[in-house]
Length: 211
Image (cartoon, rainbow, N blue to C red):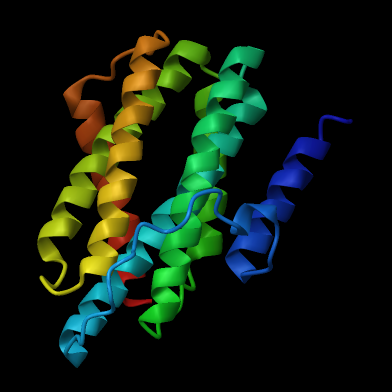
């Protein structure tokens, strides 16, 4: 493989996910946790649930890009293996969110491609700073994601048990990814840096809720 091949592979994966083209990454390894019967949601409740799940779907597109970017520039095989394992679970999240959007008669965000590219670049740049910093970025990102999911769990319509089950399962995985990163020697990012990361994430969540 040439130095350009990993970038082309990542681009192919990103385009497939954004375009909804079936590939191995689109098939979840675990069944969706949304096992309860579909509730009879009012139109306003359905729109709110769809907006929230569109944001979470875009977040999982970004998660794939971050992990792939970090893996492309990771210095150790051990970290690449760890990132690949976490990405496998994130692929489940992506498929679950896509499935739930379909159930809600909604579509993914038209901005997915933009945020995929930006996230891949951020992941690759972080990986260049060293493996411990890259692991710290994982922990800091997962910390922000958990807070984000907590907010969405509060905002979901009470009767939308299917979306709630998905977000709760995602939150458990994200918490474990962050803890695993710390045990592997991650640099702990200071709170101001995490707050800045949270503000950057809002640049994604606000527009994707609507489009």
